[in-house]
Image (cartoon, rainbow, N blue to C red; front, side):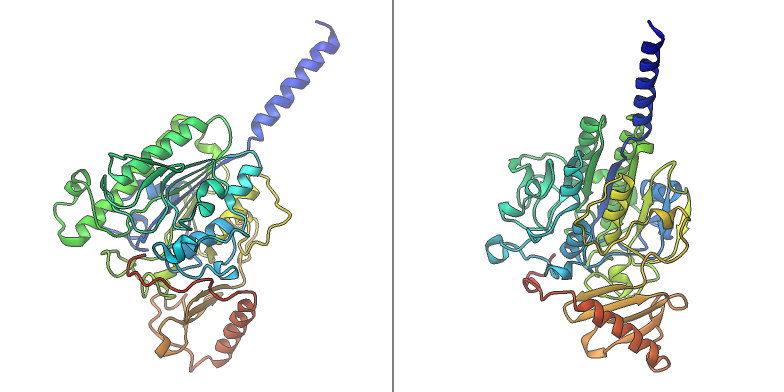
Length: 433
């Protein structure tokens, strides 16, 4: 071989190695449903162990002031998939069961995170709960996902042959497994089939949402407990086990360090499913901390610090711009409300990622700016002001002592609200969501 041919071979090898080092990361977004803030071991839970969820905090960053933009299911998911406050496009409430003949759903004018990753050459998949529209035009396969396994609505039973159809793509399947186990199985399968190239997987468990149904396998772990809390803990344990299977597959496939992982709950725990919001006031469907502050963790081994606790406020709207930045994708048309968190989590920027965060949920409102929060969660009680650094449980109303701070936060909320629109549909009449 001539000298020049050797140079060509070495150059090609060098380029190949450079490309290998520059592999775009896989992105895995895991969402629990209706979890209590205090229901993971790393947040002090004593009656159920969550070692796999806790591993995200051990191997990555735990965001102790992690929020979602809606205090219940569908609005949060609309915000997650678009990185825009869902009130920007009228998705303020859940689309009720078959409301308006199924015509309510995630606005077709919005671009999803799956759209953006698919356009960048990623294989995209969703496993689990959709809850962003029933009509075919809202189907995940029409919203950027290459693969889909799960159900389209909100609440769904866990045992076979119960509830609405389970679908693979658009085809009904006869699922035989306990549903949380089935979703874990399908997530592992997706990773196994797509491990050779970058993928985006949205794993949206319906655990621990009502109905409270757990298989004997998991119930036997909590024989010392009784009532709904026993079943709730079994539901949590099942989800944690299946997250463990997913993590084991990433490790087995040798792509663990090539995978950026986010874990959140879609909202705080409700009053009806025996969840525990720990030190927080309120619950799901309120703009108190217990409705909007959730377990919020992010792991990217070798890239983000391990075991870091980050207390500046972040929100699920940040997931998309962070993941796109990690992949080197810069959409020019995006009008994100979320921000790229990488420089903040890496310690390269010590400023807060957001000057303020905002909520609107019907007549309930909230704004957080620094340590201060102005909230109206009970219409008859008016607005209340809290300093969350000193009063995480929102017990001491400081409006009378700080009228200027009230004006400041209200002015910020009013300015933000100018870019919102009226709800496209009203709150559903069904009790379950």
